[in-house]
Amino acid sequence: MMKYSVLKKTIFFTLFTLSIQISFAQNLLLSKEAKASVLTCVTSNEIYALFGHTAIRITDTINGIDVVYNYGAFDFSTSNFALKFVKGNLQYFAVANSYADFIANYTYEKRAVYEQVLNISAAQKQRLFDNLNQSLQLENREYIYKFIDQNCTSMAVDVINRSLNQKVIVKKGDTDKSYRTILYPYFDHHFYEQLGTSILFGTKTDQLGTTIFLPFELQKSLNQIKLNQLPIVKENKTVLEFEPEPNSSWWNNPYTYLLFLGLIVIVNKSSIDAIYLTIMAVLGLTFTLLGMYSTHLELANNYNILLFNPSLIALLYCAKANNKKGIKYLLWFNLMALASYTLIVINKAHLWIVAPLIITNGLILVRRFWNKQR
Image (cartoon, helix red, strand yellow):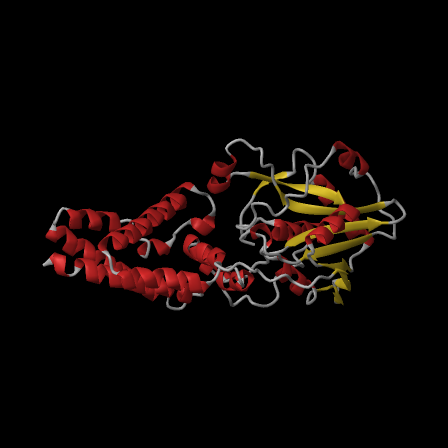
């Protein structure tokens, strides 16, 4: 998912070459021995691989074909790469690799790969093969990436459904959970990535996760889907298997987070409190600008600015100028914003992770500005 999280997800997938375009031309007919599979690749500790990866494999021993199609590649050399990524208009595209190269890469990364052979007709395999090859063509290959709606998994779901001429691949299970809740288990041992997405993502991720957008969601759903009253998965295979490597970072955990906030509260120095509130305000202003600038819907309507309140800058200014009236209004505004924010997140998945910030903000506001308003 977050790729977010997607920045380097397909770094090893290079731009498709002319030879690939020629070898897999649209008029190539698959034999009766052809197979179509969905490949699910597990997560890793790299940020680009926190949510795993989905690919589609087409095999035809008669025609000497064994190719893997992937969505979600991009070119780091794109001009204004960072701005386009943040804006949400960075062009992503489909690529194809030989199965051998694909597996060699995941073997090198020590990431498990699972294969689900699809139980679909020869005509449906041909349409899937043709549609996948069409996605490699220059006029079709580019698309705008969206964390939930258009990623390596959702694009694979779309091309399979289009090839079946019906919406067969739909989500099975967890449709009563929000996208934010579904994402959280993927951040085990990656606390600060979890904190970052918690405060960056707005209301869209609080919607019910009714669509497939993560690789393991697709894998799980495929095993429960039937096509023409038969399981759509003919066979489940384990292609690669490795023991997961735990994240050994000493600092990427909630203990350093709580220690940092605890020290701010315990030290109780006005200069440190001012720096802390300034950082909170600047982050809130950043979230506001991102919500307006970016087309990523996950960043829009970010109620976390009630916690990371830009008006804290004005409050600090009023305190320095000894403007008691300004302090009073801004203090109460921020306290009410904190109360409103608490009510909003009280039933959200990220309550526990922002609760220490709510408490820290409240304590600092009261101890620094309560007496100054009088």
